[in-house]
Length: 307
Image (cartoon, rainbow, N blue to C red; front, side, top):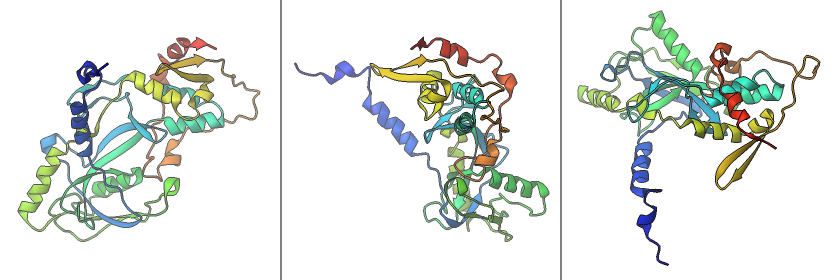
């Protein structure tokens, strides 16, 4: 029997996939190398409706893969407004945060992390010293920049003509990464030597909308991803199986935690202490119990079949 590619066109469109990959490839993030990196933080672009030098959004990391948190109002890369909704990952993180020490660790791992994105020129990088690139500021560095701006003693910091470069000093790696020795350079310098070059950079930032990095996945995709994330199913007392390419989640009775369980010690929920030293894991989002009074999580679990 001869196979006809057109018979399967409704399930897979290769040209659409290639077009989307091109879009994704166009979004570049710069990552600092070990040691000193000299950058220039570019000013907000009023043509894009921006008022501050950075953009904030919330991201969940599940087994080193990012998932945009559904609990935020943001316009995505296609220009669609995503209205805030209950996020299944947030709900499960909230459910685990009062459990055992291991449950609390998982909760911190999967909870939403604030990401602070800005545009920079990298002074000592041939590719990015004239071409702006996105950079995710660490929470401590962003706070330091904001404090310097608000103090007003340093004059302009993000100005394209009268601004100052920033020495970003990266020491250590992983959870031990530190930027504590980073500092602002005192000398005032333009970002480039000619007006034409400066205008070219500013025009490029107009095309680099922060919304272009935002992509929301469907709620059911996040539900499946979090139930399959390392340690989550066991912590919830859930067994997961895959049948015919569909996830089937089977509920088991999770052991309850009582006041007599002296081996379990509840610790204050403070993800910032764990994550703000690593550029990949910035300030965690603390939970507000009022946000979860009408949780969908129990309904999700009740729909699962008992083993």
